[in-house]
Image (cartoon, rainbow, N blue to C red):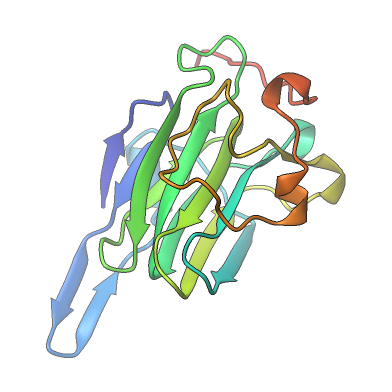
Length: 186
């Protein structure tokens, strides 16, 4: 398993070793031992799985705030997505900066996102399955959305009119939200 730093502080791309032969393939999608050796300490308590039938579906930008905040290990197991992560930790050297990484069933890449970040993805194909581990349980009261096209963040999604949920359509800008993560140097 290869752990790759990104341009966002504390966000990593994880590239598992994939072993294949004429029968198919095998990979370790998570190894606590490998992560601890890389200085990353996470205990995941919940797995989530979503399906999007249409290309151009955008889910995000989402997080949970306060004690319900979640770190996530993200991957796409069917189709392909443009996965976006935004640092919303006030005081962080990468505050309001974002990265976009293509995750697909073919490239096996994953993204490890700590608490204090917004997350969203755009489906690049039809019939997308998306999985992620979370280190905290879902809490509806702590669930937050920020508008996917917030001009203060200016994510380049590469699409003008994505398919979004009613919740995401009505999401506020970051400057109008109550998201209050604070960057803490480790």
